[in-house]
Image (tube, rainbow, N blue to C red; front, side):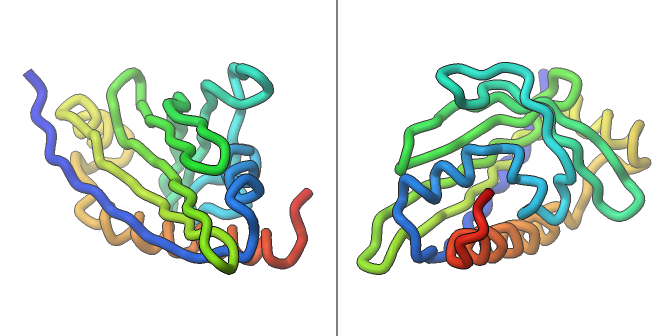
Length: 161
């Protein structure tokens, strides 16, 4: 039996761009590394209809570096993009984005759900010396705000490669 403590966060921002365009930017997981304070690279392992299904995220926080396996669960253009994160097969988190058209563009809601089980906490102790990052909520809240700010800046500046 595994125990699980459920924690969730949401952050929002309005972007002056159509929902379909904002979705495309978020669903292009290679661009995640430009926006996220923790993710520094991604590697897409499998695609369906040109969109990522499975990818690996490479992350760092301070001196700690790790990778995680990610599986896209929802890719509904202009509405929602969501993926689950795993470490060595153990659930870690669910990350997602919802898009709602507004008069001036799109309201983007980024959300995170902590899905760590006992196994993930044990791996945390092995790899970073502690079973649970007590600051994870604060770290993610800060990271979400920064990621959304960077997404807004990227799309509103027209710098989209």
